[in-house]
Image (tube, rainbow, N blue to C red; front, side, top):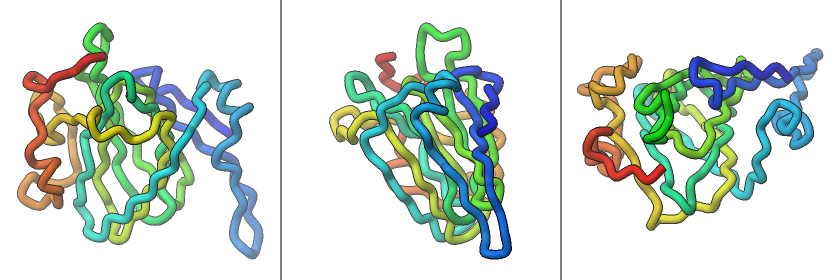
Length: 183
């Protein structure tokens, strides 16, 4: 497995080895020992799976507040996304900054996003399926987020606000400056 620290080093791009032959491929997408050796020591407790049919679907930017804050390991089973992590740790030198990576079924890469980051993605292909592990159970009372298109974040999304496909919840999320953040 190849692990690369992004511009915010706590966020890591992980590309597992693939063993291909005439049938297809095999890949070990998660191994606790290998992750610990790479500095990622999470006890994942829940797996999530989403399907986004239209290109330009935005999901996020979501996070859970303490004591239910979640680290995530995100990968794509079908299709392609621009995956984004925004640092929402107020005491961090990178507060409000973001990093992103293209994840696809073809490249097999995953993004590790620690607790204290808002997470979101935009689909780049139709019928995209995203799988992710989290290290804390979903807690509705700790569910939070920030507006995906907040100009203060400067995220170069591959879709315009007019073409983005969003949930009612995501349309109503606050900008970073107006969000209640307890990290």
